[in-house]
Length: 294
Picture 1 (cartoon, rainbow, N blue to C red):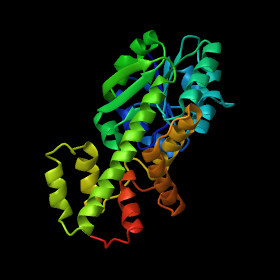
Picture 2 (picture 1 turned 135 degrees about the vertical axis):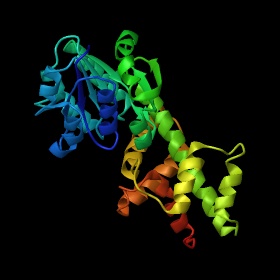
Picture 3 (picture 1 turned 30 degrees about the horizontal axis):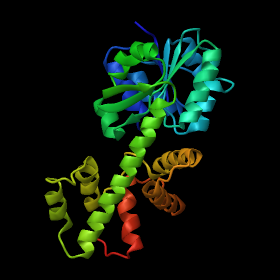
């Protein structure tokens, strides 16, 4: 059985690692905050003092951290994975970073005889807990097949997209759709309120028609309940749309809807709302229109 390492034990990483442990895989884990490793230690995982130590004790190392500099530090820093990984080891980065950064990191690891998959996820905290994430992977097909049984412990929909960076391209597409759809739900419910209709009944009616979406079903209800507890934070949406728009700029591609939503997330972070859930876009539309609260 492959020896498994896991680095990054936040809202997403902790339940993902626990699902690997529940499926019988022995883990070595590391997180920047030692207290984050407690639940994994209780589940039988070994704790490490650094990413280098995790790599020394692992054949496959999963990483899920916040942003490109964090991934860079975990893999290539002074105590990074690359300094402890054996030839033929695999790094599976499940963070959301730019496709170009993913391709660059894969090439640098290949120079050290270490394989890499970029395998970002979608499904939020609920999907991470339930093991029902959608996982989109980029990298060599044979490496994907080696890692796929482990990915299936964490996700229900596991798809190999193509070569290195392809998983991150798919994740950017996911974030465009997710952000723009949540914005649409926020606008529709604000419209219903201002026009004098019961927004809960409007949502109920729309759930049965062509306008149905998971965003309307889940986030729409939470918007109406005023529940903005983070499953996926505004500041992470802001970061992901920055990646999208930076790449769109390089491609000479206009993404007007994504650009508008990105500005709304920027405003929220500036207003100190970066740790709210992305469904708090409802508040942005409400404030733009000086709407009465529910």
